[in-house]
Image (cartoon, rainbow, N blue to C red; front, side):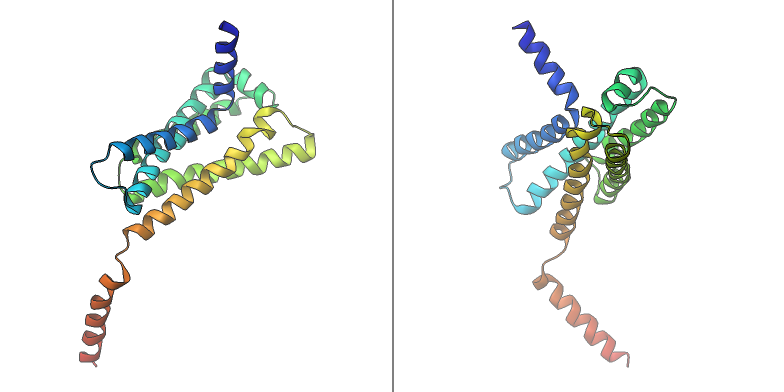
Length: 192
């Protein structure tokens, strides 16, 4: 049993981007289940977005901060790097993203855009760096070419999709916009 637990903990710790991503989905599902409102598209997107920002951005980057600041040598080995002072810079950037993610999770749309956009640039840049390392240095370490690489792409893409769906859900329907457009058109004609 102890070996099973050790293996499970190692698996969770080594695959933390997927774990935090999945926790966001699970938390959103639980939140929707407990919601007194019926699950309409707007509510579903709202819950998915809030919990995605909380877990896949806020807690993920806090964990990344801890790993790169307190366990830098181990993190570097996992990625296939040598330990260097840049570990601290990655750690502090991760801490900044974590703070923004935890703040924005249950705030407005604009805060969530910021919480997803900054880390998305970091993650997509890291993915490009991983590809470069795979091609030029043959670095296929688990932290460079494994699940981390794929989650560096999937997390920002999923976040962007949620932002687009959230923006669409917040827009008034065409029927609600039509009377306003007609009034604006009449007002423009009257000013001529």
